[in-house]
Image 1: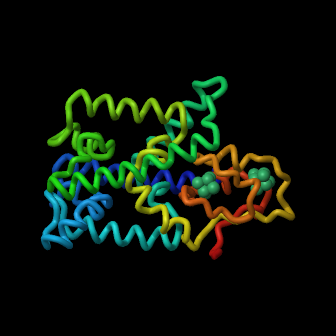
Image 2: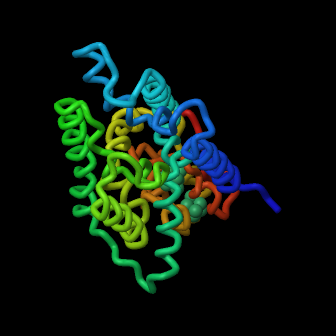
Amino acid sequence: MTVTNRHIRYTLLLVIIGLLVYLALGYGTRSFEAYCPFGGAESLWGLITQGEFTCALGPLNLSIMLALLGLALLSKKSFCGWACPIGLLGELGGKLGGRLWRKRPKVEKRTNGYLKLLRYVILVVVLYFTYHTGELILRGFDPFYLIFSGFGHGSLGWISIAVLGGIVVAALVVPMAFCRYLCPLGAVFDPFSRLGLLKVSRDDSSCTACGMCTQACPHEIGVDEIEVVRHRDCTNCLECVDVCPEDDVLSIRARL
Ligand code: SF4
Ligand code: SF4
């Protein structure tokens, strides 16, 4: 069996999910929340204005956040494709949806662009209310928190169940719907990801324009139409590289 990038990526994701479950069951010395990178953004204002971290957050959240911003500068949104359980949920939901729908409804390009602005709105709203209340107001709506805490402290009962259910159903209709439109952490990564050094590059002279790379991309990036993938949503998941039938047409390279 040939080991593909997907095999390596899914193995890494399963290891990370296993570690998170271990922490969520209370076996670790810290709560799984201590490792949430978005906590770094949520705690920043409190740290600057009052010199203390918000609620249950701490220095580890901030350190992880800063490390991941550095990773985005190196390899775009690799965290989202290679380490985030919610990214995996969106990806698998998209694949399952592809089998369920005879013809999946397509989000028109302009609408897709407008919907992506939602993640910036959510980022601003979450940070505003977190800074003003000193509470982690995202908990009741955050799929990561809801899943790993088992709808724990801060969840909003049926509202949280409906939110999580909505995210799962949305992934069946639009691959990576939560990541594309709603994830505030993705919004934080965006400007860094645009600058990310390692990018998928396409050798146009050997490309047969079969379009399989674009079809395989969970973010529907038109890989077959560009020579260097600079798109902010690219997670360097390498699904496009795996699926390309031609040798060495697609590769990951350092490109400005
Ligand atoms: S899958 Fe490979 S050969 Fe086909 S369009 Fe994409 S880069 Fe070109
Ligand atoms: S362009 Fe390729 S590496 Fe980037 S997200 Fe799409 S499939 Fe993954």
